[in-house]
Length: 404
Image 1 (cartoon, rainbow, N blue to C red):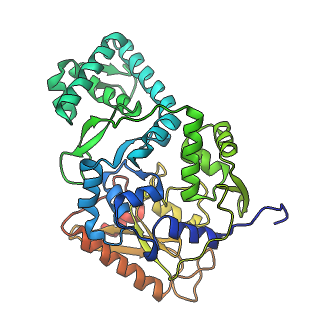
Image 2 (cartoon, one colour; image 1 turned 180 degrees about the vertical axis):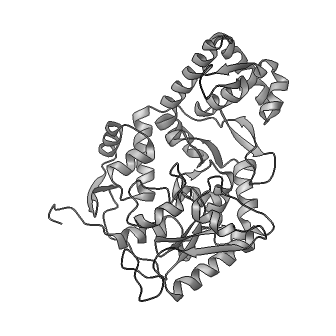
Image 3 (cartoon, rainbow, N blue to C red; image 1 turned 120 degrees about the vertical axis):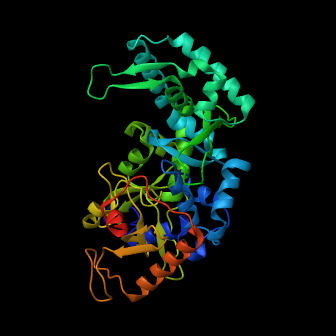
């Protein structure tokens, strides 16, 4: 395109997504660990997202729940913890040091300072008292192995201390030390979420001590996190990288330089790939379809989404906070949404142009081949979910319509 850089177009970006995000049938894998390694991070704000994202990428989706439970709670090869943008993710355990140093430290300092400040305003005990209670709580957690907030408070009653937050404001509320402190300890990398109280769809978690990890220099950790993410998601623009990491643009640029990232030309401007990833990649052998959950890391992977998600489809697929709902994919682009009804049926709707000869906004149709493949994926999902019912934590307009 006149700048001397290699051009990577939409078709190649979609081919990279299909293979590297393990969505094309030929790219599917055998274990949740392989899924997490491929994607680096699975959104964990909605507990069901982790399992649904894994199941969409396993060669044998029937193994989704027992294998993901094993990885999270028995082998601890995956861990649920705070990461980028102060959001809960599931990471490979070996990535905890990189995530903590690259994104957690700055957020953790703000969280602890905020808690101490809020307690002081309310006349609650001071930082020295909080530190003493924290050490007692961590010791109790070490004895118990894992525990709910209520169980920890029985071991350390001072965790039940309550204080008024934002007194006199419209959003005034009463906070409990245990709730706020566990959040701080989570961001600080001292505790992680353990096995839920209910099924795999439950959001009521026990807590456990975080796995031990090395303390890395921030710049080194940022460079490594960016390298891993670009390997999975490159090419990406500087804006994509800043949005996904939550870092300052100076941090992004420093990390790009540190890893020797290569600039390429994208339709939206300059993008970046890791140093040895400039060459063209093969396309999947067969057309493919996928049903991905709300907050799936592929749908939420980039700030600039026009190359896989037409702008006119977005109002029905996102909530008011920018969280994506369940999406239907065909050959590397979002073409619709899906939902599970009360009787367990998986229903879906095409939002892009239908028919082989009827184009959508990008000149691409969704014809009979696509519908057959999407139907097969819906049946595949319905089969492994069985009697389990899943409702996205963040509801979107089309998903609500599908179940009404």
